[in-house]
Length: 188
Image (cartoon, rainbow, N blue to C red; front, top):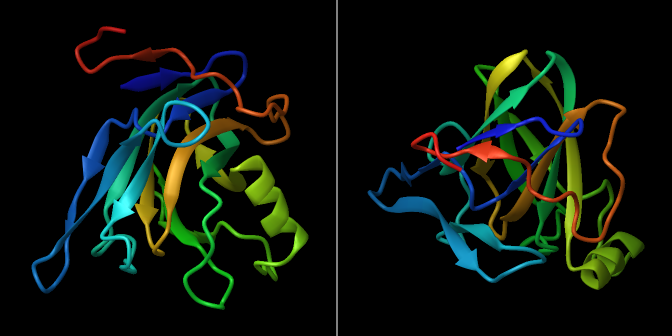
């Protein structure tokens, strides 16, 4: 499952990961991502389980791994299309971890600064039935690996779009269609 940059971007449906890595908690419980078929705007979504747990990225957090190929190395944006979940606390955070290649894991808040359930950002997420969050990353020319870690309860990923900084694909309701990929056995 290696996605190839096409038309200046890479678009990946969340269920088309190369690896779904489970993680064990100290008490022996296992956390994982599960595919929810028919959920979301396009094909499906992936949700972290158990749904009430917080995780530490790089320690006890499950992650999804994606492989992709870019023409040029440099600064890129990873735009996550996520379910418009509300945070489980009043801190206004819905966290996930993002790691490209061997770089450090960056834990990011996918909600805007000052997020409240009764504000404009909340209303837009509800009406659009999606929330988008972009994070800057550095990619090398050729093959790259992206890992998305669960951190907060309620994190549900539907799609990822990767593009060079300053070259965002045209906005559309469903986002860019999925990019060409080579399958696990070299098949499409």
